[in-house]
Length: 337
Image (cartoon, rainbow, N blue to C red; front, side, top):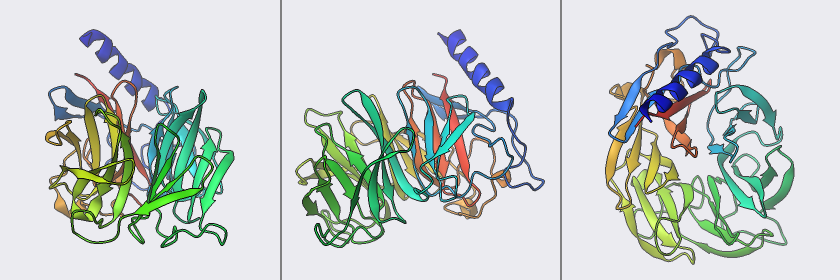
């Protein structure tokens, strides 16, 4: 098994370096070329230097978005640039950009419906929820309209996720701090939550995810400025705090019993089913780089994060992490244990 994993890591590194570029920003720098280990125990990872470099040598563009992985293993990364949503192979080859009118999609998730996969995005600038095919064609949009006014509007939309029954959950973490629930057609069903620091309030509900690890499916809310993850049932009733004392959590992704948490203050934390941290990845000892959008990728050590904003596991528990960064930064972590 170890030989197989080592071979996969070696292949991934070789394939990625074959089309890498030494500088994301076109300036001399300390671009890393050596894989680095991070994590511990079964959550030990190796980085893949230059994963996701763009063939034209230009920056990916600001990464203030999300990451989603299809069943085929293709990686979807949203940006705030005219590249909109970028698609990469598992080895990091840039395949294409899609949905040019979806620049600045703040979060991405993939949901399978009737055998087909769809991207759901929180289009922050467009103040709308979008459902797209994997090729970027618009299937559904949900907006605040006269015919369907949304309490507090969708200004400041931050997250969207889809329940197994097709209900769409959306968070307005940069605005009203409400969570809205829609049916599959986009009809508003209910709204709950408000801004604050109390138990049933949110202070930047930045991310949402459906948690199927328990007997009854739950909604996991990433409550960034309250530095916690909270569980709700799918009717909007609070279950309780799942994890706390986090470093400004932004997004989560599940694999088995574990959830990876992107923390804006320079770290990814792996949390178990009881909400306890079991591993820390890429923990940045330089607090001057925490949550610093203008940090140049060439100035960030390999295997270290500055501002994890979006992330996703793939089927093999490898992780793809997006730093909030002005020129764009995506890191692939290959699990080695």
